Length: 278
Image 1 (cartoon, one colour):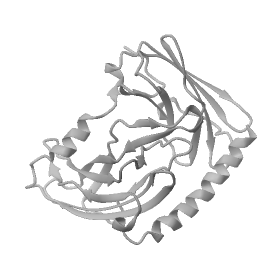
Image 2: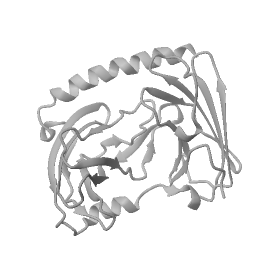
Image 3: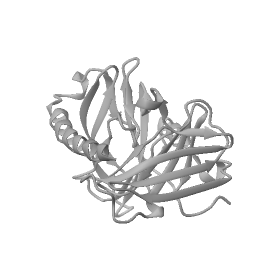
Image 4: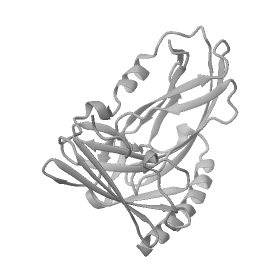
């Protein structure tokens, strides 16, 4: 497991380099592979939240990455610094697809992404002034980091929903209750410089290139995945959880585990390692 420390140190160094490269991008329109980037029209929903979406159009064959892009992908970063009347912002990632082979898989979107964003205002009677910045990777044979920034005013009078954003909201991974999951087993084994997470999921096949992704919802923690393996009705996956120093965390929370299965027939959000299937 010594390679984990080397990987984490390389990842931390690449973050610094990535930020420099992103800010070196003069303008989105000049980035190779990027055809267009904009915010979709926003609106006030019945639940008192606003919705908008980042709309990214890439050149033929280019891709961008999901929130958990795989070991060889580029982790996206979206921030809302400078926004006013904004209590909470939630990105709602559509179901992604898997690229590459078992030894070099990445996860993301081909040529087009509409990424919905749910915004909760502090005062529902007042508009939100949204300031959004995004660091994204777009790739063909090589990857190009891009830096995007947008401003948008969302007003309570705007109540007409945007069709493209609604379509993206519908294209979510199937929730656990609708996934036909029969059993989910999570075990955790301390190792020298990582915690080994073993997942066994009894779930119907989601088609070719099935990939089970384990995420850990805590900053400065990494999970390095082994290839997913199906054995009849069972899907098996191993992941190594480490922190950004290359050491094993002192503890692990079942509630912070996030499990997603992706295949050619769709994706399923299996949630965390607490509740058993009903």
